[in-house]
Image 1 (tube, rainbow, N blue to C red):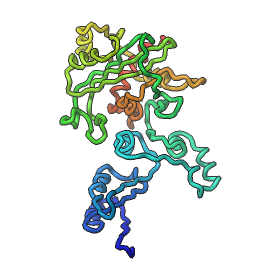
Image 2 (cartoon, helix red, strand yellow):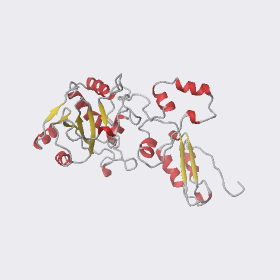
Image 3 (cartoon, helix red, strand yellow):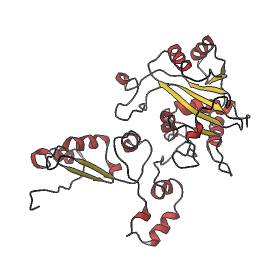
Image 4 (tube, rainbow, N blue to C red):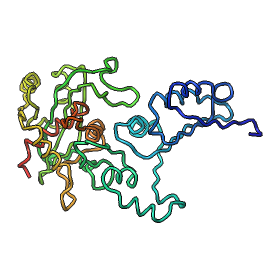
Length: 327
């Protein structure tokens, strides 16, 4: 341009294109980056783009991405949106005055994941999501401040899934430092605080995830929270050690031995809205790890649940099964 500015257009499809990025802009830096169809970028591409934002034409620099929603496991959703590294602006097809009416009508006819993403703007799993009835965000969904603890509002239970390993992130105790969420191959121990209301509804109002922490210490920390001790704690099979620790802390422990497929069906029914829009399970917004896992837990090509992001959902599934007749 006449004022000395340049506009550079390139892709990041392979290593050759990524290498070109390193020399782009005057003095190897740029002032503004726009990434179109940003869900096609890998997180490493994002980091490389950030490293180029060192232009000096103005006292500020800016990185912008435009994209349709993808799966909730995508790094853009986990790091930039949920992780709060970016300011997010949502727009829909109706906001574009150049879209023809028949295109809007076509979007309205979409169903399933395509409708949720392209018409509804939701970050949902493409295929195989186990709890696809889980609704996080809109009014009438599972996530609401109404799930807050109510003194004398009903009995308190703990839903427990035992674990310890930090997986591929031992230096941060299982947590990805960029997103603040646990890495896929970690196995945190989970304690969920759940209050059962008089109508049988289960309200998850508090969570505690921890890797590389002894179970007795974790239990003591949970008991120190400003809530009543649980009426009982539910844990899964093969958890003799955590069961003994719960008993040692004077907490009645109940073991859920339900069939996985049958208890998943029960859990799906508890999360889903009935004909009146009533959901048996509500979750407080502060329970961010449980929310992320419920939006990520999926089945693999063999039809079995993938052992990733299943810790909170498994803990809650055991409690839902144990209380299935309490409504």
